[in-house]
Amino acid sequence: MVKFRGAFTAMVTPMNKDGSVDYEGFAQNVRFQLESGIDGLVPLGTTAETPTLDEDEEDKIIAVVMKEVSEFTKKTGKKVPVILGAGSNNTRDAVKYCERAKKAGADAALVVTPYYNKPSAEGIYRHFEACSKVGVPVVVYNIQGRTGTNIATDTLEKIAALPNIVGVKEASGNINQMMEVIQKIKSKNPDFAVLSGDDGLTLPLISVGGDGIISVVSNLAPAEVTKLANDALDGKMDEARKMHYRLLPFFKAAFVDGNPTSIKYAMNVKGMPAGSVRLPLVEIKESAKGVIENALKECGL
Image (tube, rainbow, N blue to C red; front, side, top):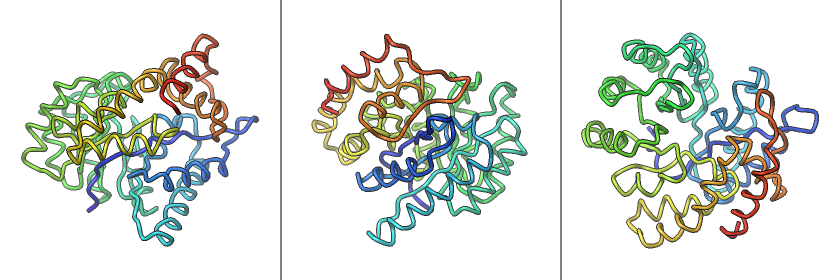
């Protein structure tokens, strides 16, 4: 089973001017990530605007990323893990998406806490139990700000004991909770990956025993985010701190007007495939454009 460690990109879904998915642009972005040394890819997550994609579009995105990764492996001998988004607030659909990830040959499925329903701790546990039975490795995605429900550490501890649960994307923004997860779960199972869901917490989390980052910023700066994560993991903390503070202005600016609205604007500024966002998201505010442009310059990106 793959050990999830380092920097993983939560990939955007580029759009054409007519609002359709730009599949060639997506393939171009995947190649850029791979050639820049990224440790892993995470398509069909929050940053991908997955709630606005239909299943045919999702299937085509999966086909593109798996093809590009396979060709990269043949050419270089390097296997780059793919964690496919597989979340839903309908457990039956989440199971179906986990089955799709398994069939596609993904290394894991990223399963978010059921949103809107606001299930109890027992309901959350049973949701992940159902997904774990598919047989594909599952990374739990805890993000209270989007789901309305935080996965408490004692609940996550029960989930982590299930077969095929291999890690957590911790986007609670609570470093104390992250440390508790490391203390209570990872200390007993060193292969359980604890990945930050917030770019700005990559260095703090790794410094207390975390494994890396599922990053938004690495859509634009994969080499830099990879260096930050891996220097920290290798104990090169002075180098990691330098990169952390170099990127800090953009860590903030990449969310100044929401996600993925802000990162897509930054990518468009740099001439990368990104395009527009789909409703209910709308284009970035004028007041945010200067913040992002200034941050890019300040960070040397």
